[in-house]
Amino acid sequence: MRKINVLPDDVANKIAAGEVVERPFNVVKELVENSLDAGATKIEIELIDGGLSLIKVVDNGLGIDEEDLPLTVQRFATSKITKYEDIFSINSFGFRGEALSAISSVSDFSIKSKGNELRVSFGNIISISPAAYTNGTIVTVKNLFEKVPARHKFLKSPTSEYKEILKYIKHIALLNYNVSFKVINNGKVALNLINDNNLLDRVKKIIGEDYSFIELNFENKVKISGVVTTPDVQKFRKDSILIGVNNRAIKDNLIQQAILQAYHRKLPENRYPIAVLNIEISPDQIDVNVHPAKLFIRFYNSNLLFKDVYKAVESCLKNYDLKNNSKGTS
Ligand code: ADP
Ligand code: MG
Image (tube, rainbow, N blue to C red; front, side, top):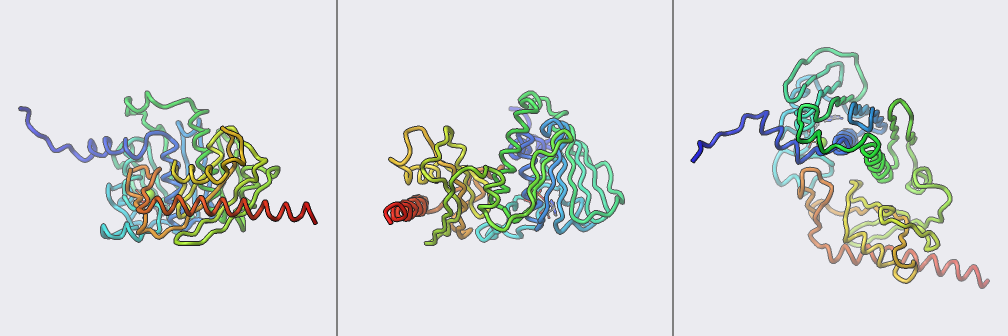
């Protein structure tokens, strides 16, 4: 038998980082979620080569005190929970205290806040030094995975990394319509959303003005709000359905199925509506801690949720039909 070694922190961090960050998209997601957790109302995302060369996220959130700055990159260090049970009543996106430690172990990383800057290069703290005072926080990630060949090999082209990021920003921007988002890629402004007062306004900006949308509001055990299209809108791909849970962008087949079932017989086969739904559910009814990247969550009562989503969409389409038919006959 070989001797058992406890891996040094930097090795453990690099291994664990693989679960949180796989691609530039994951970095952007973690940074944007941190900005939202910090109460930012304005978030700017700057990319070079789809994030492969540079990801910079600037927010106007609460910022970080000087003494906390080094803790941001320490594994399992978080300001969002203090005990395990907290994750059942959590309202923030983050709580694992892993993202910045992971990201800074696989990149040239800098975090600036309240007049100080912490720089880390592939897991090694380089410096903490005074910096220009900024209102909020600026995180810069360069050369992602450059010294991690196993990961670097699997990165896709700048264009496909960029597309994935933009798709995510649109998704999270729809679910947080009151926040301003700006995306710049290779110096060009790709998206510039000033804060909106309601979801429909943001939907029109992101998805388009030309569709006929119906607003949806449903309240039972869960609260479901959103926008869906009338059945004359027929998309070829299911990714026109965007789902959020407590304003978190998630993927969920079951909720997607519930939405599609409400359109049964209204849409031809293999055609899909556009839908943006946010489900507000008590944090003790879900488990967000299924996977470090938090792309999926688990619902304790998924049957009930399926029914509620189905009912919400179905009744909204029915009301629309009724209104339209009565208009037609009067
Ligand atoms: P988590 O979000 O799970 O707490 P992270 O590694 O993403 O873990 O961040 C660690 C800590 O750094 C956060 O708990 C928060 O206190 C602080 N932090 C990170 N990003 C920001 C930001 N943009 N604004 C303010 N604080 C931040
Ligand atoms: Mg976080």
